Each structure stands twice: as structure tokens, then as C-alpha cells.
Image 1 (cartoon, rainbow, N blue to C red):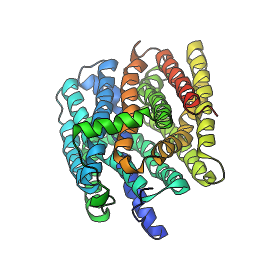
Image 2 (image 1 turned 45 degrees about the horizontal axis):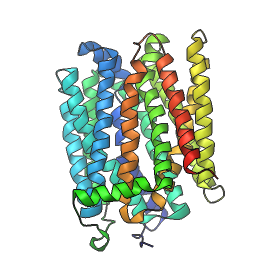
Image 3 (image 1 turned 90 degrees about the horizontal axis):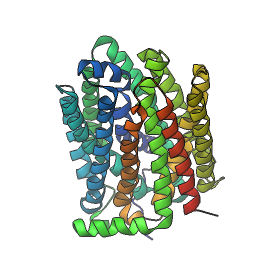
Length: 400
């Protein structure tokens, strides 16, 4: 068994580590969610339709996927600290450049760069957790991260909505650049190396490909990773489609949309903390099955509501909240269960987890607006299908 790096001693030190790693893993929700209230205005400013605007979300997700493929294996070879700092610094620059994008296509390209550089924080933060924790402690720490990362989707659209009160969507990207700068300084000062030279892996592209092929041949790793990726795709369909559904179909203001988004995100935080408290008393696989099953049922109810079309907003918001909140059980358990058996290649395994999530999310995002902004049926159908597929993937990989 591979020896763990020593975890920080003391409650305060563990809390500081959780706050820093949570901030780094929050690059995805921050980059995605903060500018959601400005999507309709962004489309008008850049003379772009809903699908073209949603392409900027897809580009960011694609960048997050590609960046993790690079940063994860690189951190297994060079250690965690140097690739992490390089990625966070580059993210800060890319975010500032997004604020100056002259066209939606330029913005999409810069969003890809933003995602690719921010991916280092996400994938390496997960690898650091695996370097320093095992067993129930691993599940509990990932649940603790849900408290930090869960606040990001709560606060991000609220901050974005308030920024839009005083400036345009471009100001949102300047705020993201400032957040990147703060995290860069914090990581430089407060993050030590957790992968000593004797535990690093040598080899180039071929060795990395062999490692990842071996991971994909592991039925349990592949099943947990796919279940988590499909669940993420359902949530990202919600992220991409809900600004248009709530604001343009139901007439919500950017601030009202931000409030709804925050309430849904509180559900993720609440169930994530419940998951951490139950760790050690309820098996992670049992909690994961409950989360994925609940998500699938809520997805089917949501599709029925939007297919009927004449129901009030409350009928949409209830299953939407249940589906999103279920992610608080799905994400920490799929991550912990997938990484548990592969401490020696935690960076590469973390990268594959992230790639599946963001590739599926990138493919799903445009489907939410494929029929225009006058119907919520594509969003509901996609979320229901991905939720059911996540449940099927979990059942096939762990039939007992």
C-alpha cells in the first residue's frame, strides 16, 4: 500500500487546507456560474443567439477537460505544487482577457483557455486530498470540500447579478481574474508539496496513456467515474438552460434567477454535509445509490412538468431542487470511491474523473437550447436522460 503524505495536524490547519483546496476546485463553478445571469445580455451585446452563447459554456468545459488530461499526469511526474501554481497564474491572465473579447467566437476561444488553465487547480486539488487521506477520512474530506465548493455556485450567480447592477458582463470576468490572483497568492504561501520525489512517476505520453487505459479497464473505477460524469452532465444541462428557461420563459429577473440558483446550491451543500456526517455509519456506495436514484426520479418528474408546459413555476422548481441537491450525495462518493483504489496515480485518476464530467457536460450544454429559448422541453429531456443513464452506469458497475 502506498504511504500517505502527512495530513495537516489540528482542526485549524485542516480547515485552512479545505478552504484553499475548495477554492481551487471551485474554479469550475466560479468560471461557469458567475456569468450565468449575464448570458442573455451577453448575447445581445455580441449579437449572438442562445446556442452561440451556450457555446462559450461548452468551450470552457472542453478546456477544463483537456487541461485536466495535461495537469493530472504532469502532477504525478513533477509533483503537485509547480503545475498547480503555473495553472492558477495562467487562469488569472485568461480571465482578464475574456473581459476584452470583441466577439462571441473570440470569447469562446478565451473561455477554452480559461478552462484549460483553471483545470490544474481542480485536478491537482483532488490529487492532494488523495495524497493525504484514505478510507473514511477521504470521504469526509471530500464532503468537507462540498461545503466550500458548494458555496461557489450559491455565491457566484449572486455576485454576477450584483456586478451586472454596476457594470456589464465584462466586469464579471475581471472579478474572476481577481479571484484567481487571490488563490495564486494563497497557494504560493499556504500549500506545501504532498508528492515527494520518491513517489513520482516517470515516463512520457505513452506511459500516461498506459496508466489511463489501465484505469478505464478497472470496472469499478470506470463505473463510478461514468456515473459521476453523467450526473455532472445533467447538472450542467441545468446550468446552461436555466438562465433562459427562468428568465425568458418564466420572466424572472437576473437577481431572482440568482436567488433560485442559490437555493438549489444550498441543497448541494446540505446533502454534502449530511453525507460527511454519515460517513463511517453508512457505506459510501449506499449513499451514492440513494443520491443517483433520487436524481433519476426527480429528472423524470422534471421532464413531465416541462412536457405538460402549463404548470406554474413552483411545479418546475421542486423537482429541479431535488435533482440538484442530490449532487451533494453523488459527487463526494463517486470521487472517493473512484480514487480509493489508485493512490499511486491519483493525478491521472483525478484527471480521468474530471475529463468524463466536463466532456459529457460540454456535449450536453448546447442541447438545452437546441429548440430556442421558447421551450424548456430540451432541457428537461436531457436532464432526465442523463440522470437515468447515471443510475444505469452505477448499477452495471456495482450490481450487488
